[in-house]
Length: 314
Image (tube, rainbow, N blue to C red; front, top):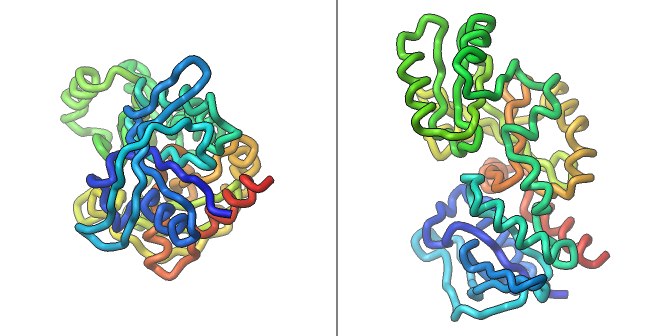
């Protein structure tokens, strides 16, 4: 039975279709005959207990520069939608949080992916600390004294904003780095939230593995290797995607995380693993679906839709 599917995303005109996981899921939904709608989060409106959206019918094509056609905007009660893919990129800010509260009004009768309450309670760089024994040594703070203590103990560190994404503002600070004081001042002036401080893992040069889990089960993986002279392996920052198999340690990590993700309704999740250490659990808009498929790996988008269709039917 065809489903009505609404995709909450950054405007479709702005996305890079080569790596956008939302676009991959839209292509798969369309191929299955589902009715697709597009909207940006500012088009949500809550009237008492009802939530409406300014939705545009959308047709998608895997053609760079000609990848979509939008129809006329319609005012639709979100309770009349079968599935909402909440897929806009962070920042995980008050606007994002407001959208989760609105969509929580219609979930689970309208299946929101991922569960808006759990997304709100599981920002990437905080949720992961529930599994701190799987992580490199990690500190979350903006307090200079705490960072100094951490740096004294672990030497080389990485600093990044708590709600950053896509490798933005990720810095390595060596033990004797004279830029440390200036970088601290820059972070203090730029980011109001705490920051993540982690022990630097030298083997990041061999890759930062993105592992995709669907409904708590391993679905695909890609190894992202940093560009020459760069710390960051994110593909939007020039990282190169490489085919990858899971190590025994990475399978153990998936097995540990899987039951919790499934229980929380976090259907599509991307975890990041460097040298056998878990660094992030991405629940808002995890990338990697298209890279896995391009390298000959599993069709993760099809896997996601198999799961979603089964959940709607049940």
